[in-house]
Image 1 (tube, rainbow, N blue to C red):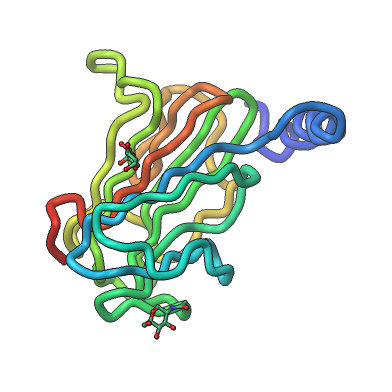
Image 2: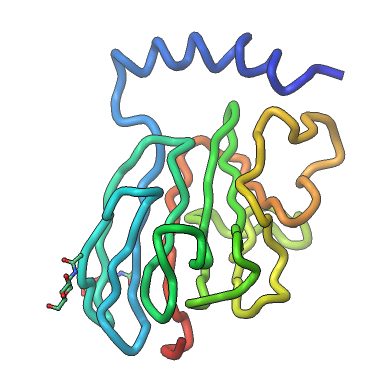
Length: 178
Ligand SMILES: *[C@@H]1O[C@H](CO)[C@@H](O)[C@H](O)[C@H]1NC(C)=O
Ligand SMILES: *[C@@H]1O[C@H](CO)[C@@H](O)[C@H](O)[C@H]1NC(C)=O
């Protein structure tokens, strides 16, 4: 079995150097607001977009393995009270998950990868977190501890889309209500 950390130092470090000389690395994220009010959206501690109005969206490329996305709307906060959508990369694959540090859901979130799930494969699923019962982490996962062996896709609450150029649509309040 090859450990995750070995893979990272063995492959990702050279890729990281390459990225200095190639096009944008990371992923394109489109944030859609279907909540019944304007929302401020954060990526980690950074304000990603302020007062995104209902029905509107913003798109931006940001680095892989960046912090998770959430909104402070409806009782959320920058100190862990928000439902979050997190992402990280490994060689040729994008991983995504939900994070509920406080256990509650301030806004339902839908995450849709740009590749369609191959029937029954379990890869590239559109995922939802609607309530406190949705599969999620309670603290951000440590990539180094995620098993690198088969069977894939990984067990919940982690999802995988095995392509390096996946883009994601993150929809807050997909049904139009908090
Ligand atoms: C969003 O708009 C409200 C009302 O105008 C304002 O109070 C708030 O500061 C804005 N949010 C940000 C992050 O600027
Ligand atoms: C983003 O907004 C544009 C302009 O209104 C719209 O055409 C597009 O479908 C929206 N994208 C998503 C993912 O909602």
